[in-house]
Image: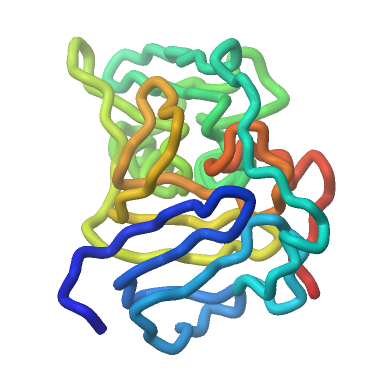
Length: 210
């Protein structure tokens, strides 16, 4: 593996070109063989997912993103000890927050986030589990922050996006509050916020099985 820094370059109408990333976790949890350069599918049509097999050419994949600026909005949920921030545009529908801390995060409730229903430590753990960085938090009067670790990796989510940690990526638009250390990349080809995931795979019922 090269000593050069890791990077991700979305090729126009083509795959993600990934360089110098040692950790690539596949859907089954196993690690892919280390390679200095990989091409990862982002059109959703490869028969060799997560790797590109040229299907983007066959289907005429268009990597042009839509205008998502009107959806780029941060909602603020204030608690006595913790404030939670949520940008819907960045949410990949992974549901980690709901599964881990349903007392605070409940989609069937308004407001759907109630920080005072758990301890600040529990809220922080749930926010840390958010793979997309759509959730951030702060103490009263503090600055909002995403919680992430230092691992440099890509994890392939089953029937979902690529979960990326601490790897620079080229992108035409970064949403308000979006973290460069923790984000998700579209691999179904349907996102309006390419190269990032906007949850379209969930709405469309996309499956990653070849």
